Image (cartoon, rainbow, N blue to C red; front, side, top):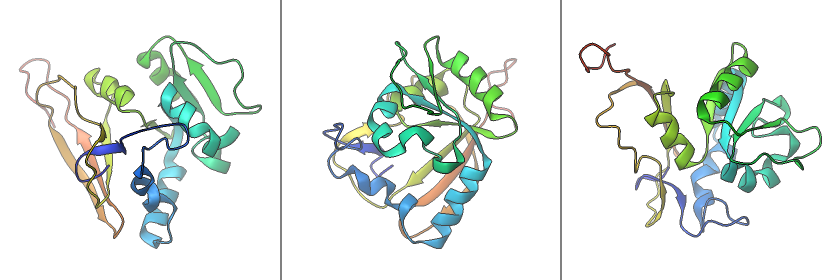
Length: 194
């Protein structure tokens, strides 16, 4: 996301799924910086399955192809949607889930084995998962750019205060990678526990 907390620029379209000029938010992932390359390799190696929203799927499929966002690693992608598609790419890694985010998470965990499950792309899906308490960690790739408008990840949460515990910070010239553990509230007293 940009320093202005935008995860896309404005004017999103199929041709420019990250909005006009929004591709700058992902250049760190495809550049020559060795630290970013190590970060991506580690994340892909630990990845077991992906949960994505329908809009992310629609916008990203031309770039992902049948292999999905993990490329040749071919990790399963569970696409949360109101209506399943019947014409996905032949031999694709995609499964369409029409019965909600909890079902998508159960299925993703089963598919992931010992690997991590990642919720990828789509502010609405991410917000739903955070609000439902389904997220254990939040990773942010903070890009040193200001965007005047777009889609913000953490708007509309309506969850009150949710404490985060810093796990990792990796600064690079094109992005600072931040990882936080979501501190789950204690049912007995409403306070976060560690």
